[in-house]
Image (cartoon, rainbow, N blue to C red; front, side, top):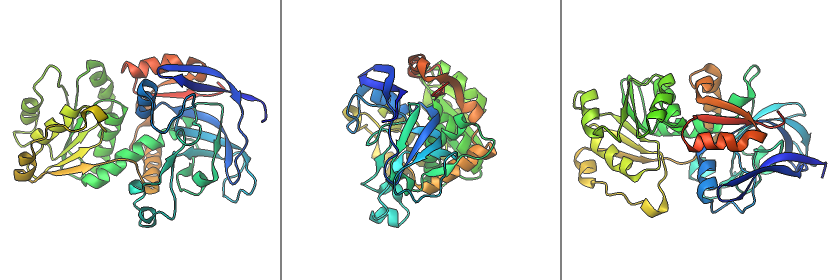
Length: 352
């Protein structure tokens, strides 16, 4: 080991400690990155609150990463060189997997992830395994793009996948159910796809305030307003053609089916807790309204490339999404803001 580094360690549920850890060596065929920025993701929050089946505590989380190549490992044959600044996607695929061969990486059962099978990026340095280098989810950070924005390519990737699968296009009316950072990304990507109107609902006024910078056409606090009635009013009774459930509440999936337009597409983006994963959806509505229910998880390398391009072009406005930039020493301050919904995207700068 070459000295120590500062890292955020999840020691137990709801207990994160900033401490010194051994600085990792560059793995064989892989890279050692000096982390410039690492975003805090909703899945990080879930792991901090309730754990994860693939995470053995104590553990370093963080999978939204931008960093600079510090060293290369033995036998490294990749194209990145020392000093290159990279945007790193966490998903590591098996190129021999039948779904990966077909370009359907998101369906692979053999996907592994940085911050699950390997320590994450909430640290001054991160070891990038050789398997990740070969997976296609590492891209050069564009010149002139701040590292805090190059770090947040990953969440946009899944959102782009959702709209690709929903065929969001010119003239669509989109309802996004959830005004967190993912919901904000859905607003931006829906606009880029040509949606004519975007409506956002949430149950927290602060979230609905934060989403305003993305300029939705209307917002609904479904904790105090009747969502189906309000949506009908906003769509002249027809309903939205695309509905996105960007939250982990089962009731949203039920309501999404109830408010969608005839022939509409309902995208089940937010996963549900195992204790409440079988909501009482009226399948007769799905049947007689000719609705499409679309499940979404993960993304393919093409979505990661598109997300970076959209950040670079401004179609995904990183400066609006990132509301808080903090050093690792203030991790728990940023964590609390994210848990309370007082921030959209919190990004940490190790070494600052």
